[in-house]
Every structure is written in C-alpha cells, then in structure tokens.
Length: 283
Image (cartoon, rainbow, N blue to C red; front, side):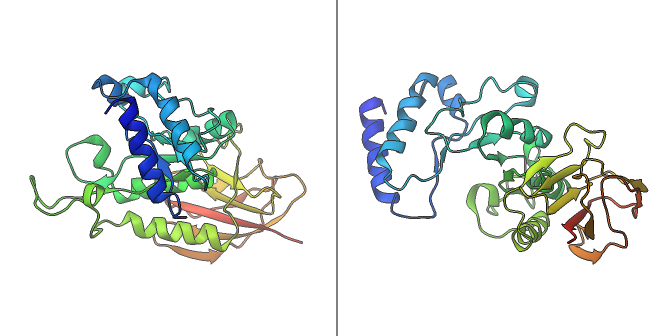
C-alpha cells in the first residue's frame, strides 16, 4: 500500500488490538516472498517493525516469519530477518531442523518458536504430509530443548475437498498428533519444566533431546526413534542422583522407572520408539 498507508494501517491495527493480552505481533507470513513479489522490499521491514513496537503501549511479543524451501534454505539462514534487532522478542521461524534450536537460542539469546515445522497431513506437498508420529516427535524435540513449536494439520478426505482444512480454516481436528502435543504441554506445566536449558548437545548422546531446569533439579530426556537397550547419561550434573519416570509419549502413559539415574551408571531400557525419561533430583 506504500509507506504512508502501511503506517496508517499498522497504527489502526495496534490501536484496535493492543489492549488485548492474548495478542502477539507476527509482522508477515514468509516476509521474504513479499520482496520477490515486489510488494514490500526487505529494507522496509525495520521501519514497519519499529512502528508496531513504538505504537504498542503493552509491549506484546513481536516477530516475523520466513519462507523455507529445503533445496534453497536447508543449510543456510541467509533469508531470515535479523532477529537480533532490539524490537524483536523471539525467533519465529519456518524450519524443521529441530536440533539447531539450541544453537539459535544461544546465538540470539532469545526464545525460539518453530512457527512452522511441517504439518500432520496427507496432501501432496512435502510440508503437509507428516505422520502424526513425526509431527508429535518434532514437538518433543523442540520443547525438550527449551524451544517451542506451533501445530498445524492438513488432512483431506479427497482431492479438491470441500471440507475445510484446519491449517487454513480451523474447525475440526481429524489427526492424532494434537492429543500427544496437549499431553506434552500438560507434562511440561505440571512438572515445572517451562524454562528449560538444552543439555547434552556436545556429547556422544547428541541424538537425545534433553533439557534441564536452571537449577538442574528437573530433567527431561527424549529418545525419539532411538531404541537403546542400555543407556548412560554422562551429561547429567556430577554428584546428582535422580528418580525417574518412564514416559511412552505416543500412548501418553507414565510409570515409575525401576532405577535411580546419575551421570555414571548404566541402566537398562525397554526398546520402543518415542520414549522419554522424566528425572527429579533426590534430596
């Protein structure tokens, strides 16, 4: 709409919505595609972001969302907006390299939200045909490293369906992953795991996704598709011993684990996909 009318529009939107507490500002969906389309050039976004930040008296969360195409962006973040800008509160990224969340949290010193990590669905596009297990797996990987993710679903009943697709329209969820994601969210909340630091990144156990509270008294370790018969967790703090609960993340069940766990001792695991251990430090 041009700079003048873009500013008027943003001032109007912020005035209407800033009084609501359940708002966060997402300045664009795939902002870099708007440059390719000749609509808003990359150099204009700093001004637009600052306008929202300055106009909002409530200082809501503010970020911006990027395009992702694996052949072009699989090994680079060059098309990202500069999330180090002071008006940006968190990374809002389209990406499914869940392992790199620890790197990005450390590098930017800001929260990381995988605001699009592909969807549970059955459409013909690769971004919308994950199984429920794969979608739930992405959430466990993100959240156990102290990051976040947003859910979507692209399940259709036939080509050219008239049924609303949840991803674009909301409505009824037909999939299975959201149930497991709700279970994970409740588990995180109930066990005080809402501020996790990623641990174990630089060890031989890199395939595990582990996070600890800042005092190291609560730890969650996600095994994903790994199915070890015997395991050891040398990245745990020295001198601490933990009681454990074994979680089947797909069945959404939890049971007391027979062994206490520390950084030195080997323990035996049942061999199944999608398991986690919830550790609590002993007095």
